[in-house]
Image 1 (cartoon, rainbow, N blue to C red):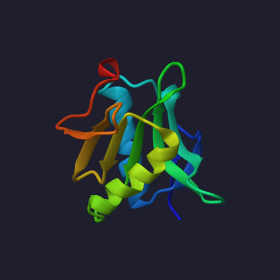
Image 2 (image 1 turned 90 degrees about the horizontal axis):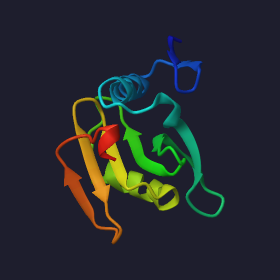
Image 3 (image 1 turned 90 degrees about the vertical axis):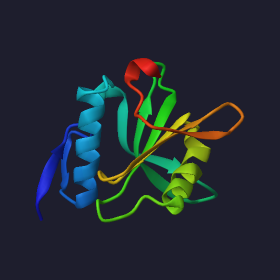
Image 4 (image 1 turned 120 degrees about the vertical axis):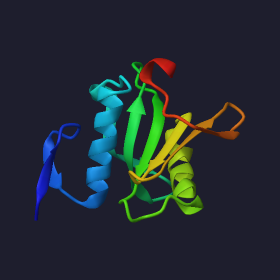
Length: 131
């Protein structure tokens, strides 16, 4: 199996289509949007119910290590749908990040969740300084 090096996990991982989307997107967050690589967690374990353990594809943390952004990746041939948003929202009941991002490289959805749990969709990815 072909593998690639994940600098966020500091190890080689299977080079799946979803992994290519993840690495490309996270590289852009660091290089173009100013996110500190050290504050991005990949495959973050969470509990979403009694005895139900899942993994978030990526979580961006603040300097005080509070979750800022939960990111869900899909392979390019997998459409971003309401089901994808629902999956991220379920994960976010544990993480409590104010931003959700869904991406398959062809489509990226950015959502902000305010203090009243209202979701608004943004037409851009916020830079690190905008958070």
